[in-house]
Length: 122
Image (tube, rainbow, N blue to C red):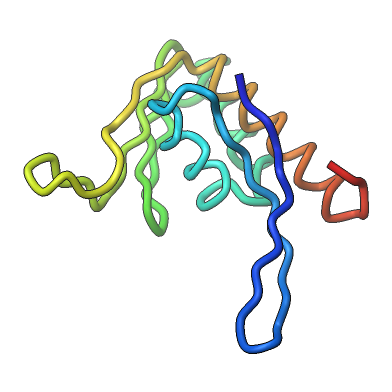
């Protein structure tokens, strides 16, 4: 379904390591980019808001980040690329998925990312 990989980036003699997640299903590339770009190491914040939606403390959780917008309701979640242009074929097509699935992806990403930052090998 998905796997994690550590990439080493080099430029002008500077080396940086990055953790990436890749889904086997190409239509899930937007979810991978969302996790790496918007969620990053702030997964707990996303999970807290999603739990509030699940418990019906708030009707929805929406936001816009650097590249993506998200709309989370109790049953479904939509992730949109704010730069998507269907005519020009730029960016990622929006995706709708079950909120429980998105919550699981965020949880796994956050745990894996934190472990990697603390020196665990992936």
